[in-house]
Image (cartoon, rainbow, N blue to C red; front, side, top):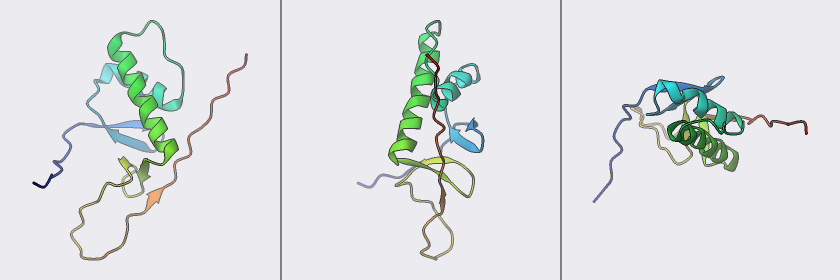
Length: 109
């Protein structure tokens, strides 16, 4: 049996400047998602839902750092590396991906 990928119905949100992602996380928890992607520590006063959004951002950050996900150059969408784009033309060109550099945070101690 073959698996078919269904189009994502989740809204597109801006994860970082110039980086977009489809997510089902509610609008109230998007700052926690962005905080996790940016590398900030979790806030101990957050609810479980906000902590889950932060953890999702951390996982996305780690996936980009490990090379499992890349930012697609056509629409600046964060996608898995093995994601095959459906194209209407028959050209065998590979999609071009932008290199997204994850900023490193330095905390003074």
